[in-house]
Length: 284
View: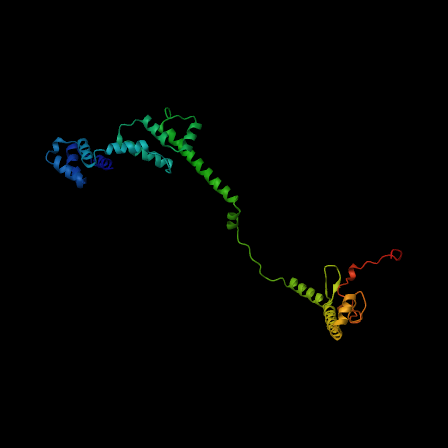
């Protein structure tokens, strides 16, 4: 950069070589200024600008600087760099080496390029041994643009195939929390009708809660009266009736004391009306 700027300065000022050697000291600092004062200042007539450039390079840069630059040039890969940055980086390294021709530079660019760039070059019948740098770079830029478009399309396709992302992009639905008063009213009316008229059991027979309550009271009363009559019997009488299978109340067969017809006007608990079968008279 220093050499470029100073040459531009000399071109604008039209200074001679002798004045250029004397004026360069104004642009030098640190190690460069030290070398100039030690070598050029005592005898400026013995130096030209080219010898000053070489002397500054050898003094200011380490001995293996050129080897390090060559190593970077030979190992440079495109990686995440764009095509323009990749070509520019290799061009700067090449300028520092000064012994690499155009064909060697094309081979180095081809070797370090990304795989999709190499594929595009091959599809266009390009070869590193015959293609020039400008043609290679132009085709690489076109391949890079196509690659970015493909990636964008794939990202959009993946987003469309993801329902969760679709829900995130879609506007939120309004949550209607207003109660349905008509449904609530119908439910209350239905419940009141069932309460007044009774509900239906699983067999299709309607049962009334008041009837169930009355039946329960009658059953409880029958049990209490049966227990009272059984207590009036002596142990011997109870044993005799029990052995004969007779009722403690009416002393007849066919039922227990708690189901005695004298105590109940309703049907016995263990008899279900919906399972009674009536046989024809000739089969009895």
